[in-house]
Length: 220
Image 1 (spheres, one colour):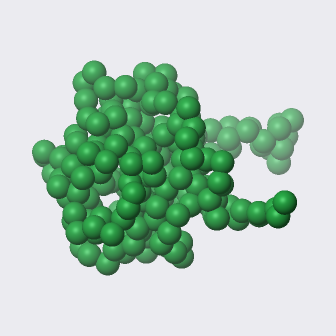
Image 2 (cartoon, rainbow, N blue to C red; image 1 turned 180 degrees about the vertical axis):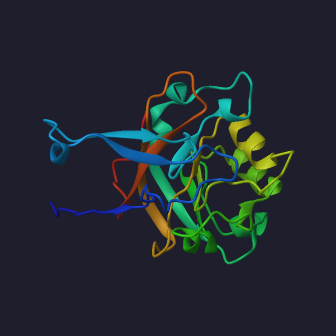
């Protein structure tokens, strides 16, 4: 039997003082609480951040008062086959999904010009998912939807249709990934959030497997 070797691609963003923070969110900081150079026995870091900093996953509780918290979202959403879809549009419209089939068993990750924004201060002008596109994804019951910046929503949107539609359908949202250099196509995604009980989101490490892991078709 021929052995298939799969390459791992880290699509998480680095966490440091240059990581863009969504406007209004808590700032990021990390410092040494203990250090060997100061005479301590060990090096020990202290971390402060909002749970929507960098690569993270939104659970239904983020926008739905009685939605599931991140620790209650089934793990199958976080280990599944996905399609990376590239678009050069300023917004992600339904037409972007016209040639994406099938969608029912695979997650969708959108690669846009947003991937070039990392390492720069937060910008309000980023590519987002339109409400009609979110409805298509919700009808398809995809396991997860991801975008390569800090929100699937137009900045400042009070209605927040993409969040309400996707999270209302029980679809977790992966935000803050970097897909620069990742070609469109099929992969296996592994992205496990921290098990924060009763919280609306959590930081995560996101990795793509190329080619996809053939056994990851129907995880229960």
